[in-house]
Amino acid sequence: MSGRQLRVERQTRASRVGVPAAIIILAIAVSLPLWGSSNLMKTGVTFLTLVALAQMWNLLAGYAGLLSVGQQAFVGIGAYGVWALAEKGGVHPFVAVPIAGLIAAAFALPTAGLTFRLRGGYFAVGTWVVAEVFRLLVINIAWLGGGSGGSITSVGRIARDTREAAVYWLALGVAVGAVVLVYLILRSKGGLALASIRDDQTAAAGLGVNTVRSKLWVYVLSAFGCGTTGAVIYLNLLTVQPEGAFSLNWSALMIFTVVIGGVGTIEGPILGALIFFGLQQVLSDYGSWYLVLIGTIAATSAVFAKQGLWGILNRRWTLELFPVRRRVDLDSDADPPATEPDAQPTDRPKGSASAPSEDG
Image (tube, rainbow, N blue to C red):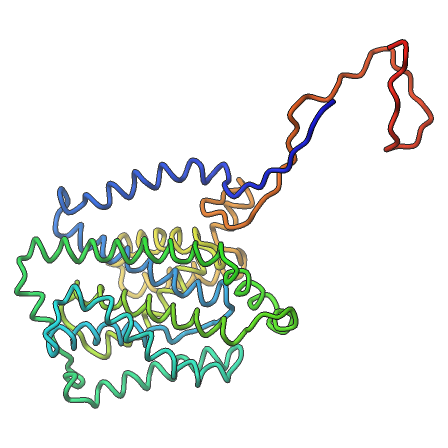
């Protein structure tokens, strides 16, 4: 007799290998301020914040179907939030980072009330218009420094080595936190609701999914992530200006990174960030040709690799470092009995049980 047992699997072969590799990489990244140079830490902050921003945009577009081109609004609010808290409110600049993220999330609520009335391309344009409104408001508020912005002098009073290490660790925490947060969301019922809304909002509503509430909380959560990341970025730059903080370039970076790597995957934005960052380091001296090449790569990927580079790799080698789906395996605790060499075929229908013969 052979027995069979159902087993639910959450891990994949790639994830089993990836976990120890990720622990090693994370340990090296955490120790970077102990052995790395100042330039290396600043470069690390740039890369890590790009990963965090890409994950937040992918959470919106890749899983909730909200194609926003106005996420720079929350990057700018986070930047000005940390500046105002540190310079005007006397809050320690490092403590002000998560508070700036909460301020961005608070501004996302009325923003959602306006933009959620729109659909598709109108929603994308609406988010950009709202971001422009925030930029113009900041320019016309003298208390925030107007068009010239301001410097985060309170950070400059901290010892340089301590400041650079702390900002780097904040960037690392934001990047790792963004990846873990998206992963946990996708493993939850809320992640299933987001996927159903992305695939067919009408059908999702018919199945009982509260589409407005689901989109609202993910929009606010993404705003918090972008705001927190923006605060870290400008702690690294030490100077905040409205033209830079609310620049459309932030959304362009997020979109490019996710499109190149792969929309709707956790691994895609990480791969896209690696590719973009590598191209930026190698080709930034070529001026406008660098931008032309970046645009060409993005357009080519959108046309010929709609699932991104990670989608191509996943189809070829079935790689899934962050599995969120359950797999059911049918295992047997014993090998099936071997067929005797002299066994004769019978005329029984397929699937019918056969009684053992008395003479073996």
